[in-house]
Amino acid sequence: MRMTGKFGRLLGIVLSGVMLFIVLSSSSVAAENLIVNGDAETGDLTGWKESKAYTVGVWKATDYSDRGGQVTGPHSGKYFFIPVASSVSGDYDTFLFNDVLIPESAKPGDVFEISCYAHTYADDTEVEKDFGRLYLRFCYPDGTYMPDENGNPKCMFKYETIEGTADWKRYSVQMKMPEGAGDIQYGIWASQRDGGAFANVSFDDIVLVNLGQ
Image (cartoon, rainbow, N blue to C red; front, side, top):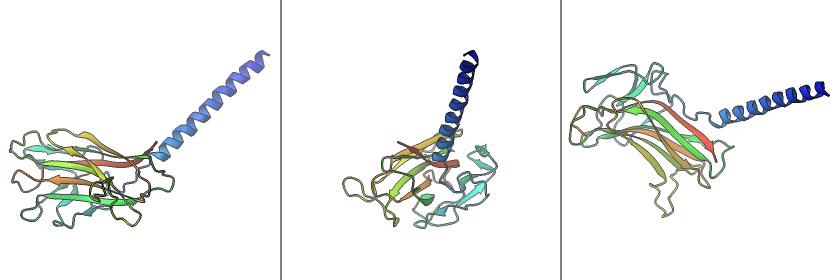
């Protein structure tokens, strides 16, 4: 009986380990990053589109920047994203964005989260400080924007504002997947407000995952 008891306990431990492995494996699959080149490690803008509404050629992946007297390196890896020029005269916002099909395994009500590490500059003393944004938007399968409950097609999105952070800090936005969604648009936004040549904001390690329900 003692041998049976020991065997039973051992079998229980093994089965528990197997179940834990299955749970962890399932979690890692569910948390797969849907963004291509979110860490800028290709050294260029692969996987991203620049805003065409303003101008192009204002972003780059870099391994170094010196903004406002502050030297910055990547949050992790070798490269990170920065805007390197102002947009056209009178327009101070520019952004990188892309869209991705929602995985077939996703269900309405699943929570999608986009996160990044970003910072601006603490020594920005201008009245209107530069800032950044991280945003997420749900679209129909054809890529058109989904309306909110009031029928406004430009409001089915959420964003987090990045301002006044001298060091890398994590930001995130979460949204529940609505019925009928087939596409997600995501982006990083830079807003130049202090009259400089470019917006003082940096982004790295951008991740989009389905957290489930």
